Image (cartoon, rainbow, N blue to C red; front, top):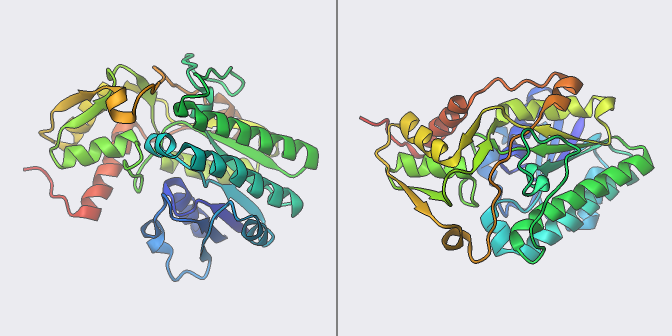
Amino acid sequence: MKAVITGGAGFIGSHLCDHLVAQGHEVIVLDDLSTGSLSNLSQLEGSTAFRFVQGDILDRELVDELVAEADAVFHLAAAVGVYNIVDNPLRSLRINLHGTENVVEAAVKHRVPYMIASTSEVYGKNDADGLKENDDRIYGSPTKSRWSYAAAKGLDELVAYVHGVESGVPCVITRFFNVVGPRQTGRYGMVVPRFVDQALSNEPITVYGTGTQRRCFGSVYDVVPTLTRLMDTPEAYNRAVNLGGREEISIKGLADRVVQLTGSTSAITYVDYEQAYGEGYEDMQRRYPDTSLAARLIGYEPTRDLNDIIDSIVQHRRSAHSVPEPV
């Protein structure tokens, strides 16, 4: 198989590149490097099964040209991260809406099966116990940029779904719930790598809000192999599928866990949302996935717990930056 991966220089995208090349497939990455990094792909440099193209998914002709070569498309390119969305709302909307439209239309035109990466953000403020794929979405005011990402990704799903139904081209929608692991950066607001970096530097760990908000984190090593399996499962076509972990924890509890596992001397401090993100920011108090659909479709069963996930990031950071073990 020859696969096109948009956003392949990003965190999840680069792990998908590794996975596909290891399985004997060819990979073409399209990435503008706005949030991704070539260092994430350095291990594939020189491989005849890998090609990198620097470009923008808003470039309709380039997207069409690359998709025409492919047997499958994995669309992971997006404006991501709370800081990025809040600071650049219009640019983020254009990428997430028009970029997805370009990728999907090219896939349908050339009859290439496609996967669209979505997010647990589409559920908004719905804090139900075990969010299911058909649960209601609850958003705040459209004038608050916090919800622009959720709204755009919801429309991305609709574009992908309608095209898939009308064209008959296989389409899979994956909803990621706080997927974390090595290569993820805290630069754009991702909480686990941000906490790990602060802990390894023995700096104060900054918890936004009260710290009582609860999340569930999944390992990139559990999630990435499911993407190709879902693409090979006709029962998954034209469906949204939740992917994530099982262990729920408060953000304050996460900070405590990171301090414990790193042996850090960091204190935990609290920063209100307005100071962190600006006026009018809203957060959700809980987000916990029901992954039973993925289990039924492909036998999805997360194997890595939160300690494993944190440790994988710690080891990656120490290796990348030569951070010594604590005495």
